[in-house]
Amino acid sequence: MEAIFLGTGTSQGVPMIACDCAVCTSSDPRNRRTRASVHVVMDGLHVQVDAVPEFRLQCVREGIRQLDLFILTHGHADHVLGMDDLRRFCDLIGGQALTVHTTAEGMARVRAIFPYAIAERPVARGYAAFKPVEMPAVIDLPQGTIQSTLLPHGGVSTLGLVFTERSSGRKFVYYTDCKSLTPEAVALARGADAIVLDGLRPLPHPSHMSISEAVAAAQQIGAKETWLTHLTHVSDHATTEADLPAGVKLAYDGLRLKL
Image (cartoon, rainbow, N blue to C red; front, side, top):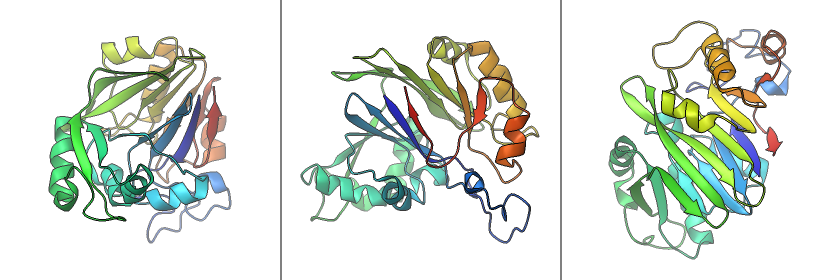
C-alpha cells in the first residue's frame, strides 16, 4: 500500500496571500502546503480522497495518472472545489460518470456546486460527470476494504477513512478535518500501520484538533506512526516536528508512505 500526500495545508494554503511571516517566506519546501488531500494505492487500486483547488497541479506534480474510486470527506470549499478537474479521469475510464462517495452534506454540496455535472455520462469528451452516493460503513473490494466513520467538524461531519489492503494486511487511517475522535473512530484506528490526523495549529480551534489534541489522540490509538496534516502557516516544519514525541511527525506535500 502507498499513500501519496498531494497536499497538507489548511484552507488558506501556505504561503498565504499577503503574508511575509517566517513560514510563508521559508526556503524549506516542506513549508509549501497546498490544500489537504491524499491518493491511496491499495493492491493497484487508486483511491483519491478529496479534490482541492490545486488538484490538477497536485496530480501533475505527483504523476497521478489513474483514479478508480473517489471519496469526498465533506463539502467544504478547500476539499470540493477541485472536483471539476476530475473530468480528465472521466475520460480515462472510458467516458463514464465518476461515482462520488461522500456524506449527505457532501452530496448536497456537490449537486449545488456542480449541477452541470450530475449525469450518467459526460455531455462530451473532456467534461465531468458525477454520481453522488452516500459512503457506506464498508466498501469491500478485491484489493481490500475501506471503512468509514463520521467525525465531528464544527457544524458538519466528515468521513474518517480506514484502508486495509487485502494482500499485505497493511492498515492506513486518514482522519482529517475533525475536532475530536469518536470512540468508534479510535477503535477502527487501533492496529494501524500509519494514521493521519488533523493537527491544525498549536492553539485550540473550534472545529479542528490542535497539535496537542492530535498528539493525545495519537497516543490513545497507539499507531506505529502518526502524521499530522491540514497545517497552517503558524507551524514551521523543522521546529514544530522537533518538539513532537517519538512516532509523531508532520506530513508534507509530496510525502509518499509505503506500508
